[in-house]
Length: 369
Image 1 (cartoon, one colour):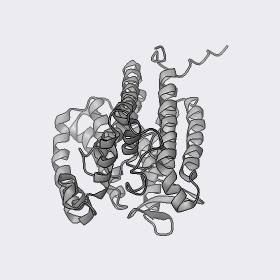
Image 2 (image 1 turned 30 degrees about the horizontal axis):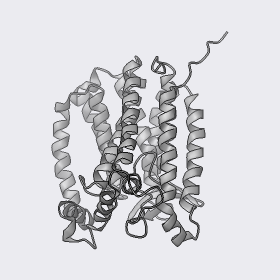
Image 3 (image 1 turned 60 degrees about the vertical axis):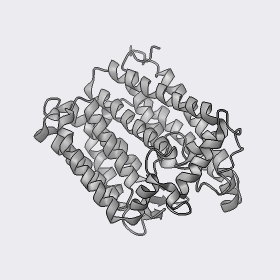
């Protein structure tokens, strides 16, 4: 008689559903003005986000029932497939250009962003390498050097699109993952030094990136140009006060803040539900990450532990960068807020990633609150 499978982690499921539902509410609120103007349909963005949320949740439940060891077995195949998609997106006629970056592959009326798939594929690959080579993974020549070579190769291909934001998230999250998995920080100092020089070169070589840095340092220097977006974001957050203007009552979404349903949705959230509401959402994220950390600590299987830490690293880095940009602490990078920002590929892959964690949690005692 087969042993009954333990239940999934209820707290992660509740937090995931809560964040996604809140995201749907604010995608509708933030987008209906732009959707009405561009598509004559105030629910255009909301309906698409709702579709991907449903696809993502169905996928999450299905993935939660698939034994996570399957991903370890096919880790290299997942990574190669993601590499192929990243290369395909660079080919004119296959890759779609949006906002100056060729980062999407069109499929009918929808599009896929290969870099989102690469996030999960790279996490699985790194987790397998470190789990199979626990001692070598913590050395420089046999561990850090080959792993960082793969990470930098991914970053380089993404920069050909160019998509600096996604490249930075993948690189930073991968380094954080390796550090959390026990790789000595001193080994990263070489790459951090080279990375600073490389980022400086990338910024200087592209005028729009340099403009983002100067606008970050002094947005009022060019309020109608490079500083426009961050200023409009701050104009949304500041008047929100403690309680906000109420859901649906944002002023900045009326053609002041460009594409408010995407990277800057947190500004609309702060404007409509205020400082207290925005911080409540951040508290939900903190509880979410603490729970992921708790699950990781309970796991004996190194591969499973590293996968959880990797997914946690990616989502945590995205939240920190997105919120940091919106409140003016970081330069504009074009990073979505997980569960909240409009974007089918981002939401779907995030929910599928949570499905992987839910399956892993079945094999631990972490589902006991």
